[in-house]
Image (cartoon, rainbow, N blue to C red; front, side, top):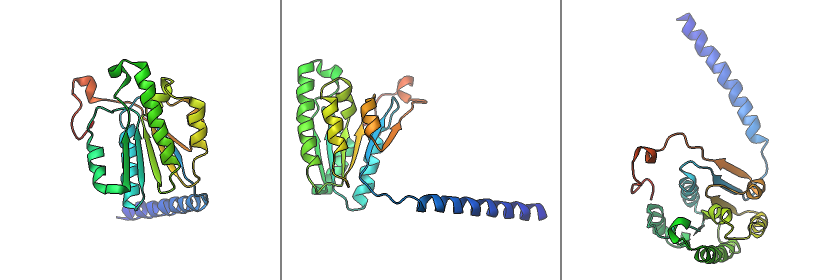
Length: 203
């Protein structure tokens, strides 16, 4: 009994110190700004994480813009769900699918350029609080868009606007410009065991 009481006291003391340190750390952060967020890496979940941010922002009454640079041939659950929010979400799917599906570089470049034109229009619209450029990293990886222009445009976005860029192989220049970069690291994936893409999980 005495040992248990001592353990409880030690735990309370440890947690009190941790709380004090955490409170001090949080209170030292005073900057508020729009973030450039990059989700990259070989692991699953880059776009999925972006949709989580979208849902959180919607819950706070924010207006969302989405431009998809790939996955054009897919009818996704996230799009169907977010369309129920009406004008609070503006969604543009302007890709024609993955590059290995089109097998036509000129078409891929044209689609990326069209998507980037729409992306710049959203960036210029002050009504948006969060914009997702889904698979923009892929368009940059294959040189479908001028990297320097894209990075410079994102660097100069509106000061209070949050932008999320997804896709594998984020360019070093974009990573350097970003405020937050998460690299999704694959540990285990059901696809390797022969499990196909499933509704509600992959799309």
